[in-house]
Length: 248
Image 1 (cartoon, rainbow, N blue to C red):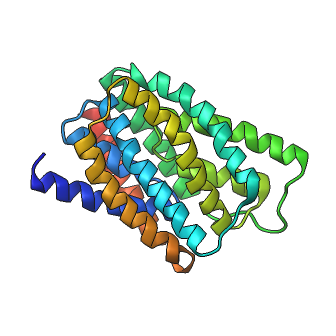
Image 2 (cartoon, rainbow, N blue to C red; image 1 turned 180 degrees about the horizontal axis):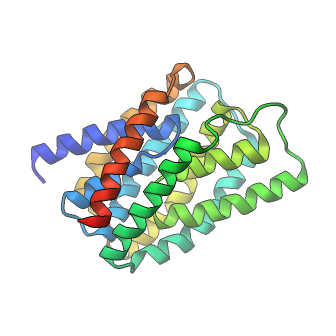
């Protein structure tokens, strides 16, 4: 790994950390980048989780430093997602490179569609925390864990959608739960990928340093940012990556 690759990974990791903390979709940039730097798709998928975990951890710490508290329910959502992520990670271990690239390209297009046409705001009105809503939340987060363990890219939008529609949480609370749940469930994915020796630690750490800094800084002033321009950047760049992955 040369200096140029380190700087590119740090810069893209920093940008991904900002994007992930504000909404989601940072892996739409980092995962294809790792593939383009020469990693096999399953190794890129595993290596990307190092940056994802550190980004989420420092984002979580940033929110906590501002007094954001989510209670025990948010922790249990992460625990449920952890079991789903273990299942998704086993699926990802043996997937063939060409198949993975095409799946990633298709998922990117669907996620871009959500970013364009989906609900862009958190839930409004009173929070829904009745028993039915909690059960729905656990079911949703198990599925989110499976997806996150398998590919991760765009999982933030799934988390935001479920929390907004099921519980009507405000954006700050949603982002805190998102960061915490990713910290918890990504541990199972990383453990499985370490067992199968799929992580490139040099690239992963370079990515993690940038992602951590982006997540920490953004979490401390994210409530004051209009993320519209970042969303446009992610959509345009991710679409270009999707075309590259699918056809070339």
